[in-house]
Image 1 (cartoon, rainbow, N blue to C red):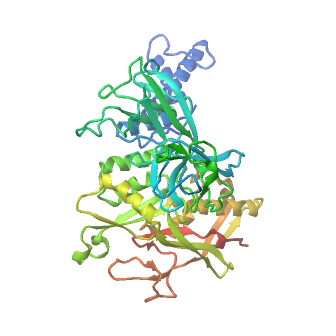
Image 2: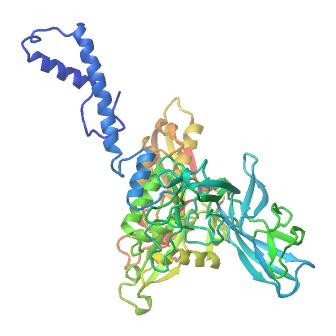
Length: 571
């Protein structure tokens, strides 16, 4: 047994135990001249050494998982994160906005229509496994009819509505109710699109979900609260607190949840009303007449892709998000605070923020207290950031497709500002700036070992380069050192969670023969000694050394144009 993957908090192994036992016995009068090799007592020594070695391994394993930086067991990482006040997230269902059009003889001018909550609609699309992707309304929304028809923008969550009725207070263990399977967690507890509803004794008002039991303590206090957590055993639980209200044994607890597909529930925009169907009666109620509107009079469409569907947070994500949340202390001041707060949302991959001191240190009063924010969304499109398509041409490839971000969705921008408000500094004025994507292309020559397959090596090099430039692995305003890229490609220990890139070990030599980008290089005086990637062509040097370290701009983000990566075999 080896301690290769654990720190040496206790640095002693099997062979050391055996040698030490023999040394100790040799110091006694009885075993001073004893020949241990092949003797019966050597079996006892070896067995004791074996148990000692196993004990060493587990002591190191336990010590490793006491600290967040070195922990590698989900149970321990989850527990350590919760101790810092961070709640790890489970599976998250994507969200979208449906355009609902109602027209017909059942409605009249001035009628008040109400879209009911927890109603199921089918998108007409399926996952790769053939399961229907369904969405649900989770909040009541009312609108007044003007004319003979009305159009309503209805927010929905991906998931199958699941009702679990009949729990009682006797089902609680330590004020917790364990749920039978995984359900949609939600990435924002303060929005108007819940993924769970808990009612007690058929009360009209459901209990309130909170992120911790120390919130909402300002009068008038609502003590009917609960937490919906994803625990260290990767199970969903409803928690109540003895410091607030807890259902008693005679109380009946009813729960409504969404059984979600996570990232598999993200779907593209579809303006065709033919694909959507309503599966529940009473989807819309005419409050003026007190009657439900017939589903035949309702058409549905979705003009923007759904966003936000994601798997449960991994160990790496919990470590990063919990540490950044701890440093932020529930307020946004630094770039890391904004990145942590916004990246915790499943529809945002990376975020950054900067103020006037970063780009106007001379001190323009018009820029005081302005916080500029740029984000990289999980899915580009009209629901987040509208883009335009373009091509990138190099000397070694005809073209590669790239996207140019154009404008934030006004609805999404307002949603993000609302999301940031609880951590907003009172003097800050927050504005969103379009991210500037810097696309890189590579011309790579490699020499491989004699018996290696060039196709296999080429495939792994390309996949490893793509993984390096994944948005999750990059940052705004970063330094690009292409020597680091080469070292990363050649290092066999640098692997992804689902690919070991084994064939890179067959490389004898790798050279970056050329690097291109969709940006020019110039070197302004107020940035420092780094060249700066920009669309402006001022002071461009055609002799510039592309391999030196490059500092990207404040809102610039590195991306790979893998369509124009050329990897060829050198002799």
